[in-house]
Length: 243
Picture 1 (cartoon, helix red, strand yellow):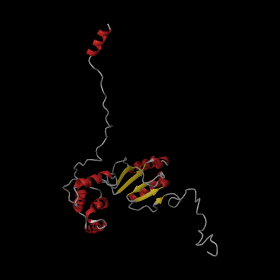
Picture 2 (picture 1 turned 120 degrees about the vertical axis):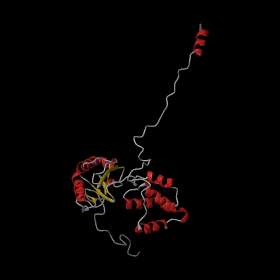
Picture 3 (picture 1 turned 90 degrees about the vertical axis):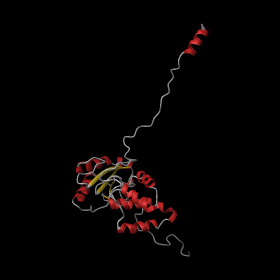
Picture 4 (picture 1 turned 60 degrees about the vertical axis):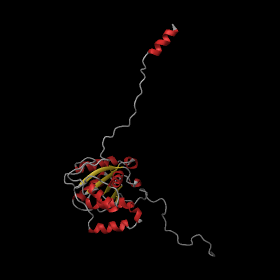
């Protein structure tokens, strides 16, 4: 009986299966791929203007000749500032200027989120929503911008004036929540202060106050100074008279 059972077991087909493990699918390949659009394709010419040609030469001169490709990031930034965004034509021009394979420039432009590879508005709004800002109610700042401009995160207003994005850490954690408008930082924000900033920009005015929108200066404690509260002592303080 045992022998028959053993033979039957050996003759039975194997039914063991092995599951396959896969990575989670990405919702978008936008970060890595370029798709030609009427506003962004390699048939649109781009070259630095006369002012930026001089600036580019100054930047490249900071690097040894054999390492001039190290200037790729500042030159991409220069191209973005002139053109409004880092188009495929901007990348190709930088590659030609630095005698680099275009693919090497594409790799840089797709790695750093500071390079906008699609057109953005005149005012590029970046709201930080990382943990410190989140704890200081950055969601309310996002909501205030969305309601005031009538757009959602990732969208641009119809008049091409404003683009809104969320960013990971603006580097001003002690002054959270923070909104960057192009190169300017606005900190210690409230929804009301945020709307005031947007209204100034709509009217063509630069907001009067940069940095903290509260009463404090820079990143000093919001409740007041806890150190350096007296006049600093002069040279030689505490030393013996004979020294």
